[in-house]
Amino acid sequence: MVDMRSVDSKIGNVVFSRLYENEELLDSITKVASQKNINSGFFFLIGTLKRAILGFYKEGKYIPTEINGPLEIASCMGNISFKENGELVVHGHIVVSDSQCQVFGGHILQGCLVDATVELVLVKAERGSLRRQLDTEKNLHLLMFDK
Image 1 (cartoon, rainbow, N blue to C red):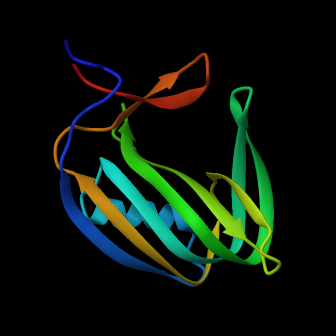
Image 2 (cartoon, rainbow, N blue to C red; image 1 turned 120 degrees about the horizontal axis):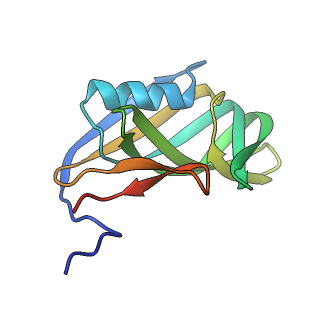
């Protein structure tokens, strides 16, 4: 019996990349993944941000919160997949801290700006694919696995 809640894979290419000051975080991760032909995999990163836009999912939408820096990225990880139409999806969560070491965390939304640098590691899934499909009840593109 096949478990349709998961897919097995192996680690493929590992890509190390540096993002530069004023780059938009999600756009840059998407660009590197696309350039390196990674449409299924995961990532993690460290670095600094000038601004973070974090989302909290509630009742079918993300409620944004803007935190202005400088900010240290304490933790950030996520996955790379694609929608039914082939669009690349970078889904990540991030924890940032301010100069007083207060921490904030949530879903990465558009508008996060790199400060000094971000060090990105992308890992390609060698087998299996991560595909997202719209769940209209939750209003989210959720991971789906092929039979």
